[in-house]
Image (tube, rainbow, N blue to C red):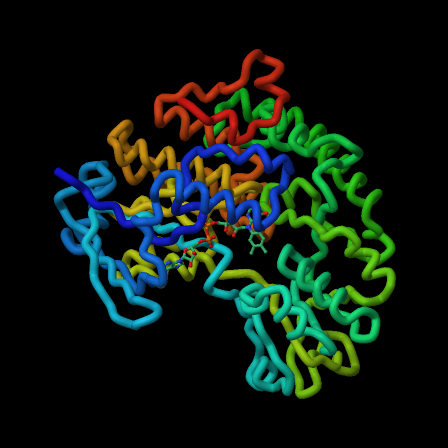
Length: 474
Ligand SMILES: Cc1cc2nc3c(=O)[nH]c(=O)nc-3n(C[C@H](O)[C@H](O)[C@H](O)COP(=O)(O)OP(=O)(O)OC[C@H]3O[C@@H](n4cnc5c(N)ncnc54)[C@H](O)[C@@H]3O)c2cc1C
């Protein structure tokens, strides 16, 4: 019998399977226009546009069928381990964002591809009367700034004393644009809590980073979730090499960027940064702008708002400001939670606040039936990660393999939780597979019945970086 699958979100996670890039794109890092063209040509090639309902927001999904108690007491996913079941269907409530009319769809399986870095901003909390309400200027989130086109963004910041809060990709890009718009007359202040190993390029000392972090040898240097005794022993014995790789990259970054001069050398290792998927590319000339004084870097463990601007902890006077842009990230976990109607499923989706979001293989919430998530767990290159996950999920829906018991899935999730806690410090909740992508892909390959060894020859297998082209065909 025909089954209906509802995919919520039409970003890269909601669309992808393997599709070659056009010959015109030769860059290792295509720009936003090239990525957009690629996604367009993908959707056109596979005739997907007719399946996409634009200007439509899913306001809630509710499982109709077996009761919450029944679902929670199952020992295998949805009672039979199958993605499709006669036990229930999802009711998907949608709202037309232009006419505000609503409609309900019924589907057998839901794939949530709602994105982790959009829509729901992470806004810091402030004591009463010390938040944005106390400030006479404007406070926006980086997503509001990003929603403007280039010209209106420049006009918006022009002539204003801007404070950007944060030090990852959005903060770096926005600070750069403000400094270009305002020069040294109205410098842009970047308030940051933690310095990061942001990079200018991916070639420390001229060596591609992939040879240090994206091959099987690099994965031998860390303890992996579910590894056996031998691999654990190898990882322990090779831990000095892991340390040396990290130092090698750190010194390479310090050689290219004046981190010491501006007190921007992080206290944590590059190894932690890459394991937590925190690496951002610094815009070219960013530190030239710091040098000329159109960007000011200011460490601030905490700050609050006052009438004139922001009050940085430890300072005597406020930093006078017209506009504060919070580049403080997103609450992707809240987005996943909010879309579910059932409180039990909301709790199951995000799990405990001191553990990673429980997703088996980064995709399946073990205690929510007939549902998968793509694009929450992240990597250093999400197109690649979503692509292989979409393939894995398609094979699951096709019946190529079955999921293990709920207990087994939860055991697997807790192994990844332990791995994240071991290597990512306070950032363990970021659900990042970046530095263990091959180990992770091996598991997907084995599930699908593919050979996980994708290279020709032992040396290539051990030392050549892995990437999307290695997984083009089974
Ligand atoms: C500043 C910045 C730089 C980044 N740079 C990189 C990079 O260089 N490389 C990289 O791999 N990743 C990067 N990322 C991460 C990037 O967000 C993801 O790689 C990519 O966008 C993920 O695609 P996605 O499809 O999972 O999510 P998204 O692109 O966020 O797409 C999700 C879609 O779902 C829709 N949606 C959400 N909720 C609903 C709903 N309720 N109903 C209907 N539709 C809904 C949204 O409107 C959106 O269209 C960056 C992120 C930021 C913020």
